[in-house]
Length: 512
Image (cartoon, one colour):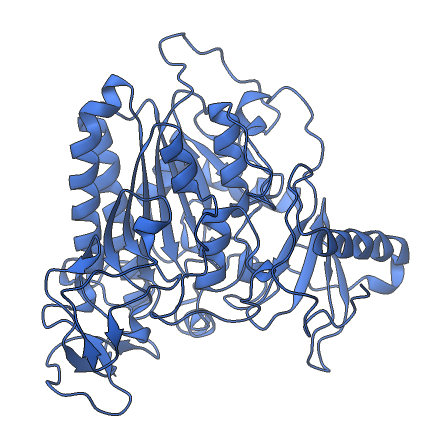
């Protein structure tokens, strides 16, 4: 595994050993309360960042800039392989399969998966002196006033980001194929979703759709609620504009010592793939490549603002994705020879590496060595414990159950770090895998064709050779670790929570 990643990074000019010494920081540069900008793309594969994929058919200069000016995590994972559960894991530091959501995703309207009182990245940072804002796609459930066709949009939306630790929210409730589409600010939409629509053909992208006028005035079968001013291709521009406005409004406080946290979950490159005209014809991977180029351009706008406001030095910019690439990755290989998952197997929804190994960059000039890499496994659930370590603040016992700090990546680079406790991977269909060091044990699933498999990722990152029968000792060890983490209700030793349900049908091997 390491040899492949070294080769990729050397060809991009990015490789710095994770054991490289960190140069000493001046007292002026050292600040333990960084601003945090967390950018979360939607369905972006590992190979959709040009610095991670020398053969990419488009370039992402601003992601490449983050890698050049910060740290590249070459073995980073989302906690699930589809939208809702990954976002839950990211924000709470807890695996979503511990909740009632065992498979798939939410629609726009239902009780929020994050229960009241649960610690989130936002609530933790808010309670320790941060401004907290979210701009973008939520997709964790909201409580809208009334029922479909009988709404009272003068009443506020409940059970949404403002109830989960965020002081500010501007965005949309869920993916665009689930409806209730409007530009919400706080608990209200300036233009409510009082019209109706269905998916329309997308002529520029592979196997895709559009959400665009004209809209219907009356409700009908299989129609979604939409605001008359909503158009799908405006999402990235509107989100970035609002993010820039919010950061600029907090810049003076940040310079005076009150930091900000902004969570910016984009809707790209998730369907509908709709790059604006400015980016048409760029790259060599069709509309998808153009959409990624547009996404990267908006990242550049954010980085430029931090420079102008003199916030770059002590702002931690985190860039990652919620899961691997949509299944159109197959068509992109055939038509453009672009591998959205890079060297990894399959993509979104899959238990294999292409489903959950994602791009992950952190730039924090005050602490992180430019051009460095970290090639040990990390999970997006780990951010909450990492923030707690940076702030030197304890986490509550019943929080961040599956969060393990990786702050040693930049603070203890000369020290050989102990292995992270096992990562648990989870597919959209409920299938499990466990990763410890270089070994990955994929569990049998509810389908008869889903058999147990073992891979040595150090030698076989593409998961081509199942070595289960050759290593019964490894299988036994990983199986014991998996069962213990499920049974205990937590990965983090200091956490004391339980799963929200008793054992469920996807644990076909499980013995309580």
